[in-house]
Amino acid sequence: MKTLKLIVVCFFVTAYSFASISPTEKDALIAIYNATNGAEWNSTWDLSTSADSWYGIKVEGDKIVEINLQFNNLHGELPQEIGNLTNLRVINLGFNKLYGTLPSTLQNLKELTALELFMNGFEGNIPSELGELKKLESLKLYSNKFTGEIPSSLMGLTNLKELLLGSNFLSGQIPTEIYALSKLQKLSLMDNQMDGEIPSEIAQLRELEELLLSTNQFTGDVPMEFMNLTKLNTFMVSDNNLNQEYISVSGNNPPMLMHLKMQSSTAVMDIEKE
Image (cartoon, rainbow, N blue to C red; front, side):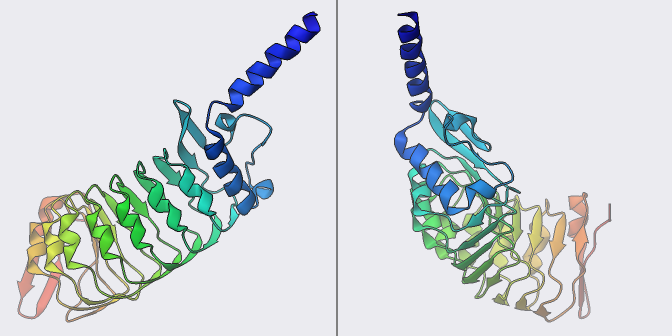
């Protein structure tokens, strides 16, 4: 009789542990595991245990709120089921071997504040649907194989603090609507194939601390309005087709950025180095 009671208790404990998250969310995690060669991950999952014990998974209130699997040897394409994890706030899959296009179902993750997929092999266009993630504060897609233009829909992500799209194959111009990203602190478009003039609207981003536009095909001059970016401490526009050469600068003394000197045909950004 005691043995029977023990079996019943164990059954309910096990059932409760698996009931801590919804079957839909658990199935979505398993789909990610299967699609990205989970058995070969550096830190793999024991699928027979409760999902809240799996490496890189954070659960709050019976809901999966974070996936952090960077440097974990994920290899494959992200499945559409990732869009069923609608309570996610953070996704970090950086430094892996993921490829293919981004699943359209990412647009379902309305609670997402950070989408970090850098240092992978993703390709195709950056989905315009990402513009529906209105709570997004950090979008890091650098060092992939994305092509096409920056979707104008991203200019509606007014909570963005970091927009890092460098080291891809992006083309086209910087959207002039970028002024709407009023909270932006870091903007990197370096090492792409973008062209056109650098829009003066960037000067309206008064919180900007880092501006990396080097190694593209930008033309014209750096707008004089950039002198208003008093918090800017890192500035790189080298290796473009600009009318003049500009010094790349990095430091921690923002007021020195007011020393944008225009002498005859020479324009340099002068800042004290660290």
